Every structure is written in structure tokens, then in C-alpha cells.
Length: 170
Image (cartoon, rainbow, N blue to C red):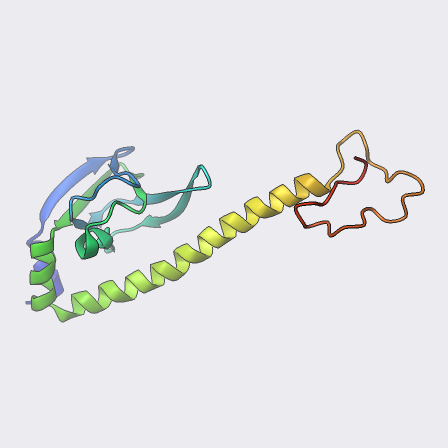
């Protein structure tokens, strides 16, 4: 039996725009999903803020960490389309699909690796942006002081990007 036949046998759920399928950090129910219709967005809390990592589009699997190690959810999933139609894959179904369709495991592993690289890059970019914003706030003089004081020679004698740097004019 092929992957299409295996997917056709899944239990289905329909959820509406704005509904949260699951939240980051909550215990998983040991199920992963396949999106048949609609669009979902993935959010992860990074340094106290919810950051959108990416969208899930029809034809994608997600939530596989729940199958493998039954860990808490690593991110939050929110429906952004009018509705979404999902197939539920529990551990028993996962094993069955793996045996009946070896292409399933290959596609899943390939997608997981691609997502790992993509997510890691996005998290690094978000943190880098926050670090840059913090550095700019430390280095840029306040709006009242736009000039370097006379006789100061250089703006600062320490590395302007270190935590000990003092903004010019202070």
C-alpha cells in the first residue's frame, strides 16, 4: 500500500481560523498530524516573545516529536485559514504507515532535517536582530545629545560592542 492510501485511512479533524491546535510546552497526546487543507502558523516563544517560525501548508506532516519521544510540544500551532482539515497519526498508525509505505519515513526524515536547518537559522536571525537592537540602543546617543563632546578624542576607549561600553555623551 502506498502513502496516499495510508493517508486516506487517517482519522480527520476540522478546525477553524484562530483556533490553537496545541500550545508550546504542553504535554503531547502522542499524535502527529498531516495537513490536508488550510494553513497553519507555527509560533515559538523566544526571549519572552512569540515569534512566527513558518507556515504549514497542505501536504505537510508536523508534530512528529510527539510520536518519537512523547515530549511536550516544541511550538504552538494556530489555524490562519478559514478552516483546516487535519489527519491524526498516532503511534500505532505511524508504525503501520512506516511498514506499508517506506517512502513515508524517507519523506518525513527529509522534511524534519530541512525544518531543523530552517528553524535554527530563523531563531539565530531573531536573536541576532535582538542583540543588534540592544547594541544600537547602547551605542546611539540620546536624542538630546547628537554631538560628541569637545576634547573627547575618540567616541569611547572600550570596544563599543562589549557589555561594558558606555554610549557617547554619558
